[in-house]
Length: 256
Image 1 (cartoon, one colour):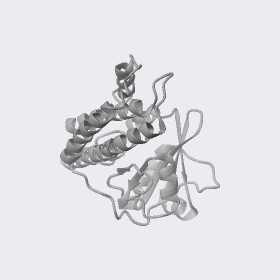
Image 2 (cartoon, helix red, strand yellow):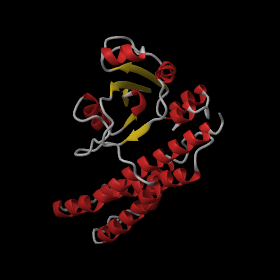
Image 3 (cartoon, rainbow, N blue to C red):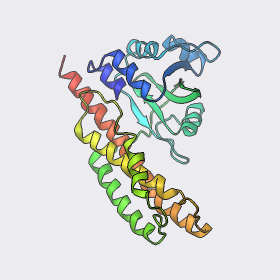
């Protein structure tokens, strides 16, 4: 979202770089292969990484227009160009940023204490990138949570866990302090916050209470009950980011 805001004149480069500090104090960029390195004038895999400011400049020179969030899971790597190093690394990380207009994908990884490395990959094709209407994703989030709650009620996931509400609230609050571009649409923010709350519920429900444990069959039932909720969270986050990027692009177009 910050990248799209910057590309459309709604955020300063310094604001984008400052926002990155939420995830790590230092960020570095390197290309995965020599061809991508040459095309974007970035260091190759055997060269010293550079800072993210040079990546922003490379995106501008290449004519990038917007970015999309991809949250791959085993069996679903749509939007990452099929099997390859990008898909493999994105699956390992659980997330990727793709820029279809310039045929690249980026995967973040913590490589040292306080250091996040962004590896830039060639994106041979963005086929399979799914557009999920934000209203549909928001509805799906609520429906999946209601169904899972009914199924989990028989497992007593909150039993012997007196602070379960605080656990959920603390986890959900981690996203409430994230910095956002000034032009962020309220609906996208609302869906992201709701997704964070539901993800916190999934996280707590997936773990055993201190001193307690479930039988193997109960653990399997719990996993199956939570699977559609995790998928709904993933879809909601991607839909909210897509909606925000669209609004930022439209807002930026109106300024020119």
